[in-house]
Amino acid sequence: MPALDPRIDTYIANSAAFAQPILLHLRAVVHQACPDVAETIKWSKPFFLYQGMLCHMAAFKAHCIFGFWKGEELLAPADNKAGEAMGHFGRLTAVADLPAVDVLESYIWQAMALNAQK
Image (cartoon, rainbow, N blue to C red; front, top):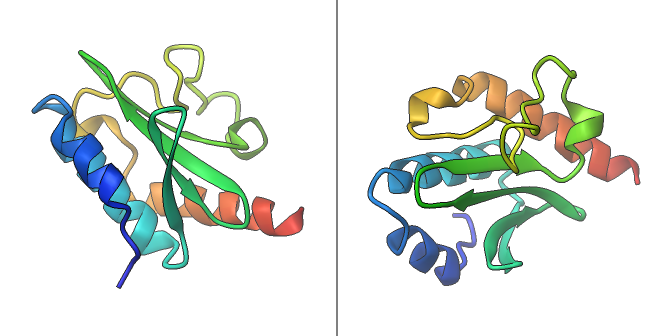
């Protein structure tokens, strides 16, 4: 059973209705891919830690973002939409805007490996 931070539960509950399914989906995928992940709040946003900063998510008025702490090392330039929003997958307005679960998990595993290399 993952250790869930109740502050992230509150963050999700206080987010706009469109954002809640996106945030819940991202949280579930991160925990599925990295069972040892720790949750926290940094800079008023949910962060996931695994041997350091792993990834983060946030909700805004009209979109959500998801990004990796070492995203520039992780994502190919063609896949990196960080210029469109703070996250690496552009402005997310629905779960369908995200890559497939297996692709997200692959990115998470790669991010975990980068953190383990320190």
